[in-house]
Length: 88
Image 1: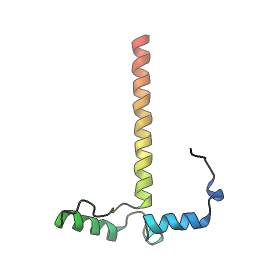
Image 2: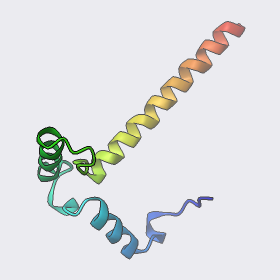
Image 3: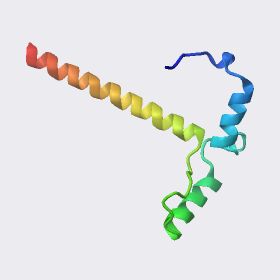
């Protein structure tokens, strides 16, 4: 079960732990970590490692989740619209 909390209610230690594990250079780049991206390209492209680590940053992950959320909403609206046209 999940409980929604505001950002201010989250311990700063939890935020620091998330940043440290997900995007160690979070405060050093503008949303694209070219070092991590290059490492992932080399490991996957040249060495063929399936688990080469991610090149995505917290910012990129958030953008992806937001895009998926918007796509799901648009898809739902199209389905509702289709059902309403069928009924009417």
